[in-house]
Image (tube, rainbow, N blue to C red; front, side):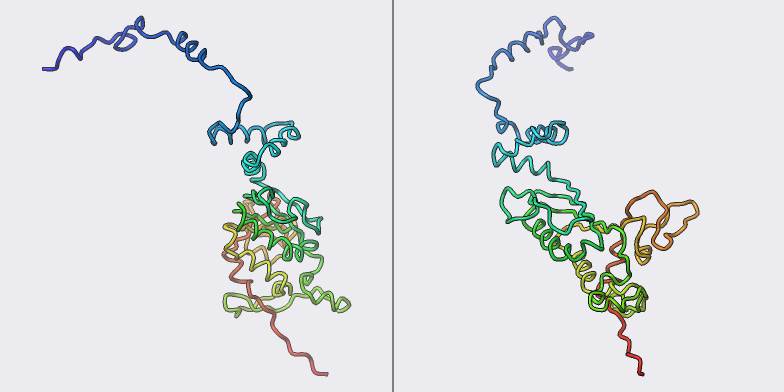
Amino acid sequence: MRSRKWLKRRGAYGSRSIAFRPNPTYLYYAVTSRWKPRGPFRLLDLPPELRLQILHSALLDCEEQFEVLQIFLASRTLYAEAAEIFYHDILLDITERTKLPGFLTGPITPLSPRLYFHTIDLKISLENNLRDFNQLYIPLLREMAEQGNLRTLRLEIDGRFPRLNFWSDRWLELAEEFCDDEVQLLIGPETSLDYVGPAFLADQPFQTLLDFLSDPRIPEVLLYISSTDHYPFWCAFHRPHSSKLGLPCHGGSWRGKSTRLKINQKLFLPLFRHAREVETLPLLE
């Protein structure tokens, strides 16, 4: 038989009458009256997770960003925490540039903004930026991944060159004999598949780009192309047209609403990496 001392009649407010409960208003004033501010508010005394919430709201949601950016000048600790938020996602459009932006130049220091980039959307133009991208940006991006926080690169190729062979070094030497004809290539894992396409696919600038896309030093590199105007050889590697009729991309023009199309690199890279042009014998006169 259970002991009666544990049995209590429950009323509408639980086992104890509301009359015997402590007054919450009294306790509130009693607790708050014990604390009085002494000196200035010390932000670094807050727990890290709460401090990061305050910095996130101040840096990204505040309209007066000019005043807020003075946080970077307060201390090295606040600079590192603020930079991790402010530079986390970066959009760079260098389609009209041939030089590095100022914040990407100079030696690496603990105060270098590029150390804090986590995700970069980088848009380049084939005509203006390919050689600069290979010579300047590829070493820089690898440095940012090895010494900084770079984890994701979304590289978008904007448009096409005015000529099919524009990426080839030969157009510099043989400008008068330049033509827009495609050439016969050997592609595939063993470069044994016959393919007809623009000559730049087998030339060094484009192959340098493909080697970079396969580089494991950056955890995630995604390749996109412009949807409005691109070389037809890309069409086999992006998603099909999103119409009810299932029409394919026609001649490098995609009729959907997207402004850029993601390339399936698992299919694309094995085919075109290490591609080489078929050597043709000169005609005998």
